[in-house]
Length: 85
Length: 541
Image 1: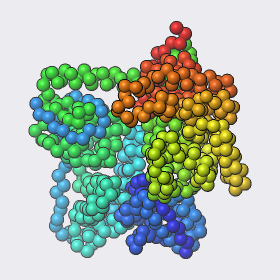
Image 2 (image 1 turned 135 degrees about the vertical axis):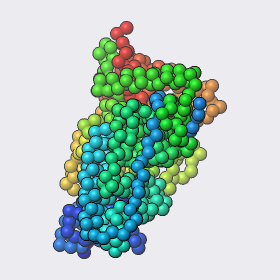
Image 3 (image 1 turned 180 degrees about the vertical axis):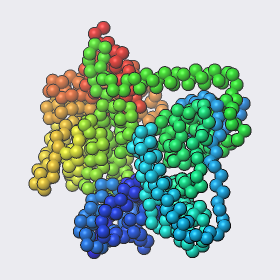
Image 4 (image 1 turned 45 degrees about the vertical axis):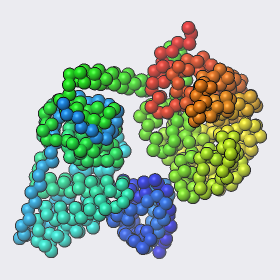
């Protein structure tokens, strides 16, 4: 399992449109991707659940990636988070 | 005459008949159903059609209002594709034996409610998106036709609220303005109104069905609508409306034209911007580049010191978006008057003359290097200028340049790409004007910060109302300082621009052009009016 810790700098947080692109990115991989904020968690492939976590600027999220392509997947997700949030 | 007030989205006037826009009534079948499988299949088919529809709306919105406004339909697609949501609806069909309509309404409403209860206003507004896609699915299930709701003549549309898919489906040629009872400045009605330049009122609580078909004036300047206005009002606002239309057409006509005087002297007109959210305004107003990008936003929007990576992402986004236009980024200009907690700056008696800008950066070199490294890395993605503020002595410039070289060497060693960039300084102190010849040898450009230059030259605090009588923004000493800077720059092939407020002062445009200024950087809204003045100026006379 790979883990990523990321602090959101985008003033809007993880909002609808980029959250949508994030979900699309996550769907490219076979690995199970779980997003944690505090003690809440959700599957990164699920847009509404992800938006429902209300991740705001300054929030730190923890992403766990588990599966056959976890290396590539974690690297791609981390890069994507840095560039977009 | 009836007057109703609301919140205006943009300054402008719309005159025409009111058309009340009413969404169809959804009569949901509450009965139990027999064939569960067939009902699930109906639901799946409607979802699929709705997903396709969002794709069509995306293309339409992109054409009408640009990529930014269209993006929401992509999000809509993903909402419709959401497994949790679909499963919730199907569960209601199978376990409760209810109609696909009932299941759609119940499941979507529940998710919408979840967003409505969030405390973040942006997320709250997203509940409207869910209700919007819900309506689309219901329309497909029930076979509703929503075209023809707009009437046949151009009118001011009045509605309780307009969902994004409704606003996009609207025939724009029949649309003079919009008034809604609900809506926020973040709503899609507002976004669409701004991007299409449509006068609009939101949160207009007094809208009434009896307005339908009546003559009205929507006055965006005064945030109100007049129903059956008096003749006097009609006359004066029609005149104002005609003037707006003329002005807008004239400015639109100037888009894409060079900023060149009648005798052929050309000058660059750039925009000043304060953060990534202003990027759109640069192209909207046809600025030829960005003469001053204040990097403070990366410091002010963060609770702790931004990392190199965070800064790199921000700068890269800016230069990449605007490439190949030149974007001049001014390095950190915070100081004792703009305090940031994590910087731990002492309170000072005289902040304007205190520990600020380049003085902080040359004292806290590791802090400064983070920004320089981020800038250098971003330079590979567009056409960038790096500008140091508050320089008074050549050694400061040399020290800053040495740090820049140090960062460059490090980055190259680490395998990073670095692009070509221009290097410049702000001329905003009398000292820098007097040693401009020495400074010009070391840089590609000067940018005159006339606000501080005036304050430091005249020793006048512009915020102090008591000094108004003594204050003169056109003080000959300031104008002379500008001329000296231009001359010194040109002796060393250094181009000279103005990025202070004086640059947008139309009464000085000709003066600056005669002085030989190479660039004027002004707020985005002033770009086209300034171009108009330049294009009508003749320096040969």
